[in-house]
Image (cartoon, rainbow, N blue to C red; front, top):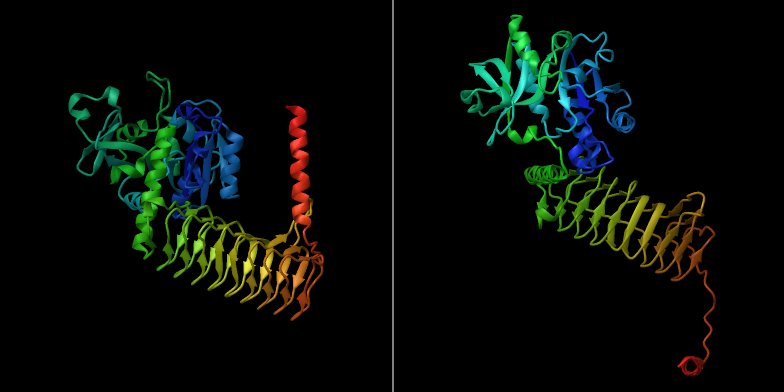
Amino acid sequence: MTLALIVLAAGKGTRMNSDLPKVLHPIAGAPMLVHALRAGATLEPAQICVVTGHGADAVEAAALDYDPDIKTARQDAQLGTAHAVAQARAALAGHDGDAIVLYGDTPFIQPETLERMIEARSSADVVVLGFDAADPGRYGRLVMDGEALERIVEFKDAAPEERAITFCNSGVIAADSATLLDLIDAVDNDNAAGEYYLTDIVGIARARGLSATAIACGETETLGVNSRAELAAAEVLFQDRARAMAFEGGVTFYAPGSVYFAYDTVLGRDALIEQNVVFGPGVTVESGAHIRAFSHLEGCHVARGAVVGPYARLRPGAELAEDVRVGNFVEIKNAVLDTGAKVNHLTYVGDADLGAGCNVGAGTVTCNYDGVRKHRTRIGAGAFIGSGTMLVAPVAVGAEAMTASGSVITQDVPDGALALARARQLTKPGLARKLMDMFRSSKEKHNQGTG
């Protein structure tokens, strides 16, 4: 059986008070929409349709950036959730199988929960995801008769005994796609808001003799994000979960509450992460690597046994092989550092290839940008780059070669050679005192003239 995902992402999110569509607000470095798509993607759906509305161009761009094969549909008028699902009809044309309706502003649904919904479809025509709420508030209530879901009652329409129910509706629904769309066709908007509600399909299905059930998940999985405060709470929830998973995976933290993960951070067993480390998107740290305090990593790979920081920055394209050392106030960008290479102090390495065992001295800069294009620097295995060297790319320093401290290297250095590229020092005895006396006298005369 094939599966389709319908992800509703049309809402404006007025309470966000933002020009950015609600579903594009980030959690752990990725839009909420991407979190929902990633959860659904684990089911290997044959088709995905994202229904857009407010800020449609930006939302569609984000969806297609995540997966170019995603289809989109627009809900130009915000007429309710059933109406939104109906807009996916053309995108799902020809689909033969189940469909799951997800929400772009509900980022924490777990793949295991969606798998249980699909399993439940073997014995029910419609499956609704519910949760036991600590404070049911104004959530819709799921009225059950054993395993059967009789109806969904909105809070405003619920009798006192129904309001006492704590099993609440998340809005996530699974059904055969043809059945889902057929049921939606029967939904009307005879309600105070004049909207077409997806939840109405349960009552319609039961009236037609179809079966419905509900499965339960943890309340935090159904957390919707509608305001800045809720967005901040969602970030905290994500980070807590990520740290807990890292602990279970064998990672050691000095101060786990100060470490921040991206949505896709991968940390290997026995990795050691010190305090105040931030992982941006696209980071993999292998087993046994050590990330020291106050370092920032994004779009990079750190191999086994490497040590990074403190106060280091690894930018996209940084590839650190085993036992590499990157020290304090060092920035690496789009560079490959081979086994055992060392860049320990106050250095920028961008658009470069560093050979195994080379040593780059403090204050070195690969001058990679000429104002128009980027150029690459290549440093051979075992080379020694003296402190304060400016490597003006494109340039290569050969294996076991050396550059003298303070050199500006503009030409390739052969293997085993020493390159010196600096002006000869000139020393003038006593001139410093004379110059300072002259400067002080000039300053005194200037002050007298303006007093």
